[in-house]
Length: 113
Image 1 (spheres, rainbow, N blue to C red):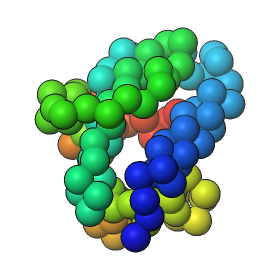
Image 2: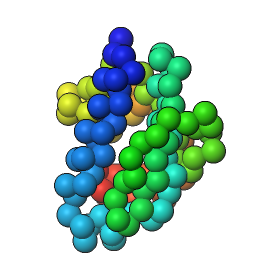
Image 3: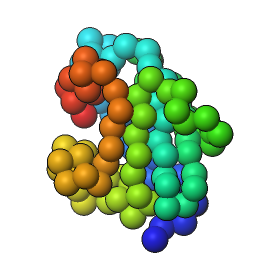
């Protein structure tokens, strides 16, 4: 099981990867959304805001359920996602990544990732 520091570094790495997406592609497919990432095995939750200009830094949150897009992932799986050891689609299909979002948000996010 990964620790809190490793999970925070993984979230930062994922945010950096999004910053590398072509700006025009990003702007075409992204609408402003609040996003939470819950790591249940550590009892942690983080929140951020996705917008045309990128992704704000992840911040700890006590209310992850208020986000428009909610992710739930175990600490080890979060690390694997950050290091490209598993793709988000494969993690989701295997039940290792849970995503609660509208179908339109899922389609938009898929085009960006």
